[in-house]
Structure formats: structure tokens, C-alpha cells
Length: 313
Image (cartoon, rainbow, N blue to C red):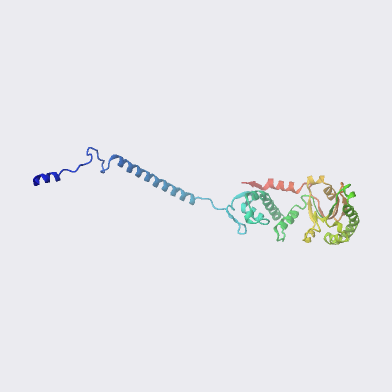
């Protein structure tokens, strides 16, 4: 084999792939060209969506409503600025209700259920504030619960019937139970002896607090059954709460109860003692003041004011 034969063998053409396949305009086969075309369309669509989202977000940001103004002394939480009701020209926000709740609860204990329960109480306070402003009533009481109890009494004077009174009350098992148990027999005997003493000392100007402090020493069997304004005297540590009388407002439903039937017939300065019809106890009532108004209840008065002033969101 000569040299030329070797060269001819070495220079054999290299095998090529198929050359009859059409070629695209960019040197790519059609399937590849279609893939990149679709990807460009997809990217373009995403860019357009992003631009629309940015423009829409900017529009909403520039045109959002102003946040309601809440006074600096109100408690603020996540959704404190939710408007719940209108009372006359005043607005009631969630934060207003929270402020009322914080008089009895910690912030962590406040729930939506409590907000719903205390919304009427908050609205009632706003109504009392409006009435007090219209009538020129001003009170200097720091405790908010005590303040609104006192304000309520001042606001409704002359509008509904109310009586301010002390009630020294006692509870005894009715007959025939007491007849068989020595403890009950002793309590009934001591009550019969104590009632005229209490009544006379009230007439002499002594306070119920002073009187009962002596009575439970003189008649130990009465310690667990005698009290003032519905509270058990001996079991109450802070006896200063018995210094204030209780204000009773006329309520139609209460007029079916013996105590209120007697109370609302009394006049200022009267002291009266009576035993419950079933013999289970009794009261000595000392009336300090009487304000005669319409025979509507405070509840009815408040409902009338709510109908006039309140609009809920």
C-alpha cells in the first residue's frame, strides 16, 4: 500500500447528522423556537400583572379613608378603631368599650364576647354624659363605677321615682323549720329582741354601721344572718361600704315584691320595720330622701333615650 492510499483512507469524510431537517430563522429548529417564544410571552404577562398591581396598590394607598381619631387616654389594641355606634353626635369605638372593661378586667382577658356584653353599658354612660352636660351636672368622684352610679341618680332626678334608703335586713328559716332546731329558735328570739333596739337607735341618729357593730356582739347568733342593703354584715371585711345608703329606682316588675311595695309607699324620714309574709326574715327601712317623678323605671327611661339617640353600625 503506497502513501496515497493511506491519505485517501485518512481523509474519509466524517459522518454528519441528517441535513434534510429545515432550519429556523435563528438557526433553531421549530420546536425550540416555539418554546422560547412562549417563554417571552409568559414573562411579558407577568411584568404587565406586576405593573398593574403596583399601580393599583399606589391608588388605594393614596385614596384610603382617614383613621378615626381616638383620644389619647383610651386604650388602643389591634382593632380599637372599629366604630360600633353613634350616640347623638358622639361616636362609640371599640376602644371606648375596652376602657370600660379595664375597670374590671385585664387587657389580656378582653374578648369579642365581652365587647358585645359591655357595649350597652358604654352607650348608657355616653347617654348619662350627654344628659349631665345638658343639665349642668358636675361631680367630683374619681372611681368611674361610683361616678356613673352617682351621675345616674342626679340625671334622673324628677324624671322617675327614686328612693334613697338604708335597709337593715335579716334571714331566718321560716316555720315550722325553726321550731325543731335550737339554733333557729335562738336566732328568732334574738331578732325579736334586736329589732326595737335597732329602730330606736336609728331614730336617735346613729348609723346602721354603728348599730350592727354592737348588735352582733350583743346577739352573736345574728352574725351570719343580719346585714345592710342586702350584704351580710359580719362576713364583709370592708365595712365602710355600708356607710352609703342605696338608691332604689322604680321598676314595674319590682312592685310585685313585698319589700318594694312597702318601700315605695314610704316618705322621707320614715323608719319602718316589717317581717316577710312567709316569716323567713324581715327589714328595717330608713328612708333618707324621696324623689317623685313619673312611675316609669330607669330601664324604661334609658330605653326611651336609646331610641332617641342611638344608631348602631
